[in-house]
Length: 173
Image (cartoon, rainbow, N blue to C red; front, side, top):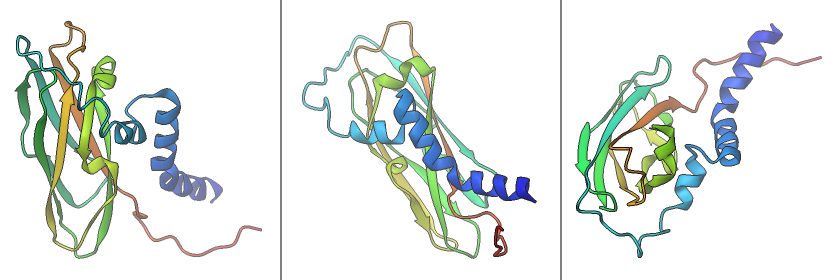
């Protein structure tokens, strides 16, 4: 019983724990990416001699009844060039749900070079029953991304922040 209660509590703590670990380590952080909304915009240089392929991926965490996909699967871009696209999400249930997208970048060495200016991952997304939305993403890749990286993938895993199951009320003694 204690193991089940512990696992249930841990599932609620995943998003805050992820944010804490990422803010300490400086990798794939929602908070870190949110803080880069305006930094470097004025001094950004476009490297028109170089191309980088950025691929976009979407994963639905758990047995969540939603559609979630990028509107564009792949972009070939110049470093420093501002890019915009959308991700599509649709609630397939008859209940309101609140979602959080958690980003990941591969190779991990490229993480500090991808700057999200506007991202649905900066905040939770609430979808009414049957509601479909387009969620914007604006970003650029630093011109100082090492030359060895010609391809990167930006992945989002979307999860329901509300309880997946309703737990009965109980008291610990």
